[in-house]
Image 1 (tube, rainbow, N blue to C red):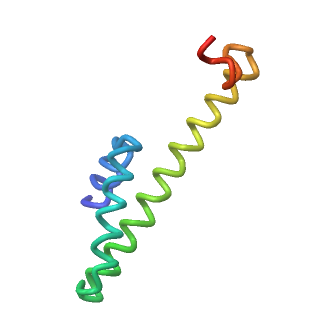
Image 2 (cartoon, one colour):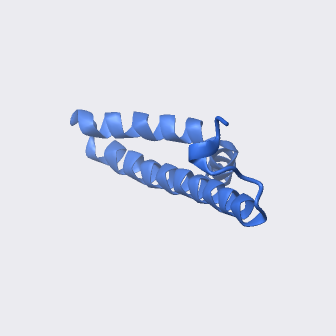
Length: 81
């Protein structure tokens, strides 16, 4: 049941929140003073956060590509005109 609640909260994270949490996990792992068991839990959490962030980036990229296909975007070099 706790895993389900954790997964639900992960899905609710924005990209920025997920990335910030991932940075926290990495900092703790890189500190070198985390016990092995906790390090393994942090590693598992980090892989889940990385996958969540990657999925959100992919979704954003697909959205932008759809806009481009529909002609709703302006080429980047002309965006200020």
